[in-house]
Length: 61
Image (spheres, rainbow, N blue to C red):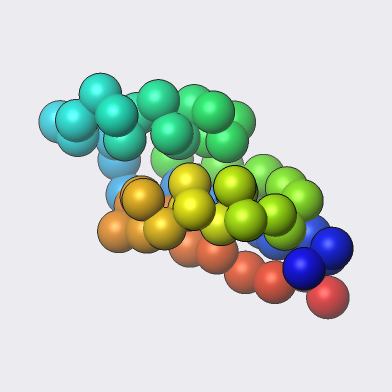
């Protein structure tokens, strides 16, 4: 899992618990439809799983 992944915020963080907002900010997602490219590590995967209902995760080719 040494590759890269693209994570896009597809649902608003408005009205979500503070824990979810912190996870999104920690990944660099602050606005709707913003995409960030991150290392594919277990920590990042865990963060993405916590907010999987708010983000779209894609493998970078």
